[in-house]
Length: 279
Image (cartoon, rainbow, N blue to C red; front, top):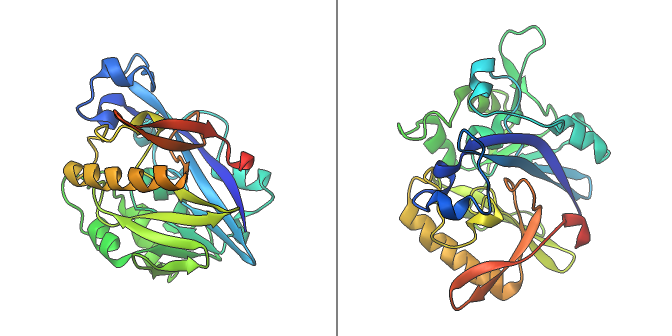
């Protein structure tokens, strides 16, 4: 098995929304805001090379939305999903599996592209199985009012229409060494992969831990649908992660690719930050 970090670009989100009730005077030290109170966010995907399979975990925001939509999120930088895959030595057509942690637009937007003639949509990855789960799929396709703006039907429905959609379950292995775990605080049945790699457990954190600035358990996003549940899930996960020296692969941290955490008398703190290649 080999893991590759794939950068699908950068965007910005409101710092207050990203840290909920935590005061700006605190979070601004780790995640500095611009003049619009926006903080920089990566869209860092993970490519898992396993035998003849190439599994891409999440795929960024995509490029099919209009200028008004992108104007809200300040996309910037030269990185893109296709460029990063090419840099790693792979092409779009080689991806065999697309694993979607959840179906918010900044995690699954790259799944679907506009057809060349501009009429309708088609899968970006023509030879891939797209993995979600039945609970989250229902949650996303019948969205509540709070999350409706994050579940864009053009990102989601064409996956099913293509016939490339498959469901997995909590606790199962997509393949040996790649275990799926559900977390329900951020959104219903978000899938967090736990990957056995070089004698360590690498965990793709998605929105359970967006950045190293979110390591303290009470630092929970306002985007979370069940924040009290997130607190419990996060505290339990951090306990296991610190005890077992998990490698936490950070999807949204613009600076830190991976980190480990440690438990102190005052709670959980950053232990080390490092690159995936340094493992």
